[in-house]
Length: 330
Image (cartoon, rainbow, N blue to C red; front, side, top):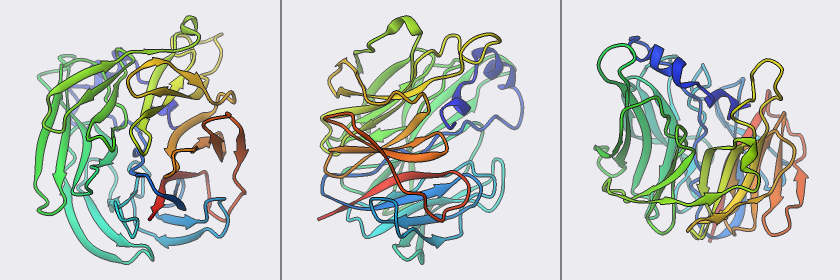
């Protein structure tokens, strides 16, 4: 499970801070989807670098690019605002190697390289596109001081027109992890801070706006919000939650149960959408009515209003395919 890969204890993180090669925390990219008609699905796989496109029911999948990361650490990709191009982070090496942000045509042909991200320390691999399509935000961590002294957490923003990178937000030092970023249509950046299990909102200039007050239906299970993705119109948030985060993975305790919830972007009581215990990596449909997600060894779509879940048909993508974005058509 991708969310399970992010469950790193504070002790483990602090013990690794002093190492020259930091742990890479897996995190899928948040959807760049904006409001529109539902178009094609964009996929990646856990065993084969590359990108695939399919119909919105999962059928007619075709591989459009074999580029990517051979270690499978940077697995996100985003449709541009127009839905006619794809932003794709690709690296030819494992570890802290530079990642190229490529602009692809829908047939996979490279139009240009828009930026290069130099990975120093712990890189979240999470990208979020601005409402106007001109900027790309991502999370990056770096060690501070010696072993056990902490990590500084940053949100960086790339200007896609110039390739210039600026620092937006810096969070306090400590063994926290910034979860996947999402940039809402209302111009706000949402992200999770897993040490506090909170969802934070900031402006792109780095100024903190607020903490979203979220109440989960059963707090007795020790839930932890691991992912947050804003709906196309910015009115709702899809949450990836580990229901029994406090005890899962311990000897004699239940396994981690990952489920999806939805809540108003202003906060409130979250409503559970899935019950499989294997749901993560939510991607909104452009019309805001559905959410595609990774469900164990398959992919499913849940209707937000009713909670009805349907499995997507199996396609020819090797390994465990995951939907990373949903094309918005005019």
